Length: 447
Ligand code: SF4
Ligand code: SF4
Image (cartoon, rainbow, N blue to C red):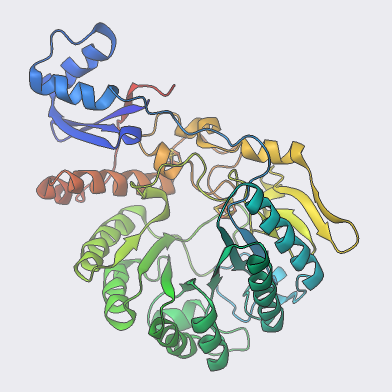
């Protein structure tokens, strides 16, 4: 179990994420609950006894590292590292001119292997994801992989799901084909033309907005689940809530995701800089309220309070992603990016000659990359939702134990959501005047 206490405005928020329980109590009640955690419950009033029961009466185990045989949840294809755009904040610049694509035979072998692995585990769904670079640049390869995946899924009596992360800067025909063939898609778009065209121009010159705008309209016409991902920088943070409203009205996507620019030690010094955390927090929360009025979720990856996880992403959860060079990795970043941070996220290889090789020793090291092994997160009340965030950009092995800007944002947005969830609207709004969570502590620690 893990129970946290967060002092705020003369009260304490008591939070048991693994029990999905939150309570707001005054200082006297807090002291009594604290005493009960070690000295029994005989001194508690009946109301406080109920709170204590809700916090402790069910055994809520902390999620830990995966064990057993390799059990991927999806198969991911980096069809190319190449890209047709030239975003000012992109740290893939050197790689994005390399248009090498994944070998189709290797892709087929991997699909066969994954389908068999799923059947052995009595799973019903073959989930196929595409990443880049821009994954739809080698469109012929994507079409062949899709055809093969459908055939292989049918042969193994599996359902099949196709998803991709894309810049959506492709032709009309491709947009229509994706709308017909795919089940879900994440499109990166930072705002209307004045922002998008200045921060995310085409590699060949000129703006990207007009093409992407047309394609998002095509993609939203069908039954495809569409998410729009906004990279938030100094350039667009002040307008974030307006951008969210504009996207809700113009595109009606299933979800909008607002992510502050991810900065690692490898990110280039570019004209786009990370946004000020406090401005981001206020704009995000304002945008969240606006999106809710349209029945649309505004997502923020590290503060999803309905999600309990030990690792933030596929890394640590048997992520299976094939690079154009045939290596099997648990992260879609460039190997040099994670190696520069002291991480080894490659665990195998697939080739037409030798088939699939998996290095279980390295896979078990990758599986240890869970929040329980991240010193910074030990006492943080967000740990079971955020799980330390990106292993490469945010909490690599020698990262500081101090809270970063990402932590400040995650902790504030999480607390704001918890106060809102308790119906404490005024308190939640007042918190945004100085949205910093300073003194959370562990009432009862993990076991
Ligand atoms: S300390 Fe930071 S990285 Fe760790 S769980 Fe908390 S917010 Fe996330
Ligand atoms: S380690 Fe970071 S970049 Fe890699 S998959 Fe996880 S969140 Fe994404």
